[in-house]
Image: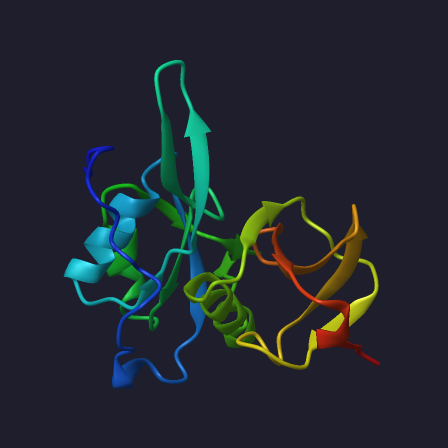
Length: 184
């Protein structure tokens, strides 16, 4: 297991395996606080994975520290075929794949791409309570152009809420009002 002082690896970058094009993404549910360990194990086994992280400053009595925390606690996204799902489930720290009616629930590649673009740039991404209804918009410019979500205005800041319906979680991305258009 990774120690708390170990520098976290950047799991959002990396070359995609050409054999994985068209392969669906799934959410692997992990033991609490095992996300980085599971992502590291997947990386060692050359299984395409994605662990979105965000930076948070934590304060203690004697110090402050900037930590890279998972955007979705207890979840790591994996891109696997039917045959490779067993390899993922055998990893220490993986509890199960997110399933509906006994079948693993695929996650849209567009949602994963939007998360990748949001976490790799200078865009501020933070966890947000799950939203499924609201004013739907599409980003028209910038690194996340084409991403869709729900537009929210709070305290004179505009945010786009991107929701992953399979795991009932959302993230907030700060965005300018001129950079979005309504989705019909």
